[in-house]
Length: 118
Image 1 (cartoon, helix red, strand yellow):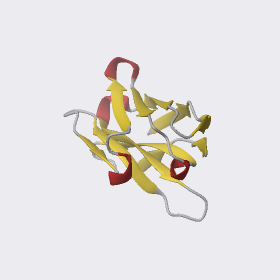
Image 2 (cartoon, rainbow, N blue to C red; image 1 turned 90 degrees about the vertical axis):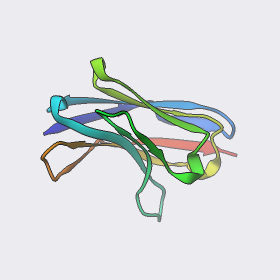
Image 3 (cartoon, rainbow, N blue to C red; image 1 turned 180 degrees about the vertical axis):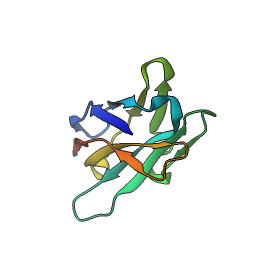
Image 4 (cartoon, helix red, strand yellow; image 1 turned 120 degrees about the vertical axis):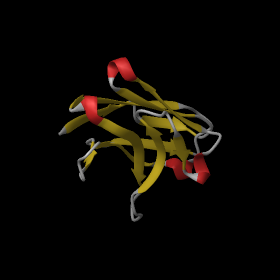
């Protein structure tokens, strides 16, 4: 199993920036990928950004391309989400997510609230 602990959410004005962090523990030697999802009230959870743990490949939700950047620190088993030029529609609970090689489960953090005021 993998345990994920997120930090870095908060309240910010539109146009501002936040950086989310997610530290993984447990079977980190078998990580396949890590990423960030978000869920706004009344909406389905959606994938925001993804990063392959071994090949470093990335993918982003179209609405955040050019504003959000996912990065990692392998030595710290940590993935970051740098969010710039934030918009009110980015308001949501953000969840860290990880998958492990050979494991069909998707692991989740507890979530961190991001609120962007207009």
